[in-house]
Amino acid sequence: MRKSTLALSLVLLLTGAALGSVTVSAGETKFAQDSLPGSYVGDLPSASGEGTRYRLDLFADQVFFLRLSYLGKTENADHDNIGTWSIGPDGRTLILHRGREAPVLFRVTGEDTLLKLDLEGRGIVSDLNYDLVRTTGLPLFEPTLLMRGMYSLMADAPLFKECLTGRRMPVAMEADNAALERAYLKAQRRPGEELLIEIEGHIAQRPAMEGDGTVESLVVDRFIGVWPRETCGAPMATAPLRNTYWRVTRLGDQPVSVNEGQREPHLVFRMDGRVTGSSGCNQLMGPFNAGVSSIDIGPLAMTRKACPQGMEQEQTLTAALEVGTTWKIIGEHLELFDDEGQVLLRCQAVYLR
Image (cartoon, rainbow, N blue to C red):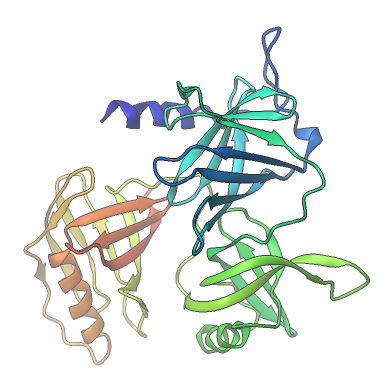
């Protein structure tokens, strides 16, 4: 393992301490959760361009919104992130957990100041500014990004639980919401069922359904897909590749179906270097060799049962396994890619006992 990866892993191991349970040496500043919500702003240097403006909003439920505005750019200048934050046992290291992207680390250096750290949790040696300063009176910004979450619709009241933050919010009846509703109603197996969806959208304030005022709501700018057999997975968990039951949930950009009388498609990468599983119709088995990110699967041996349904899905699955060259695990989800970086399949972990 590279030194930088090891150092980052050690930093992340320190993120589970509860606030208020930390002993802080005299003269050090401890992060004050009771002062939230709060907004922090600063113009920081970047490798190219005129720098990056950080706008970080921290909330008491340990959710954050982060906007990076690339100074000097006129198009696609803003890049938004949402997720959860935690404080290390030292009481001074603020860690922003962003799902697929590497965490962002800060040190609390004053009651109203955060110092950005490098990926290994160290201070950046520079005469340039790396401080974010707490600023009051800022209007709310609406984070705009690709989001995944559990969606349900009951009595014309759509609800969305975002995967990274765990926040629940109503869905605004505007933009591409109609496409989302149609796809959900087609995919649901029972009324009100929660299904995983992917959308491009933003979080905005919209009038409350009852009473006065506004509530935080999801605006669906573009509906991407609904995945009936997938969930957000457990937060802050990482499943191992080997000896985990991987339920196949997608092939390319299509959801995997389970036909009546068949097993669900699944894979198990065993400790002895064999992959076993089922395409739904037939059992499969073969060797595999996995590196840090590379993987070589096959040749595969399969039973020869002919099924009235699912044969095309079986062919797509086996082809994906045989041409896949790289893999990645994000939380409890495994993705297999081809040489060009295209996602061939996606699985969700079910732990073996």
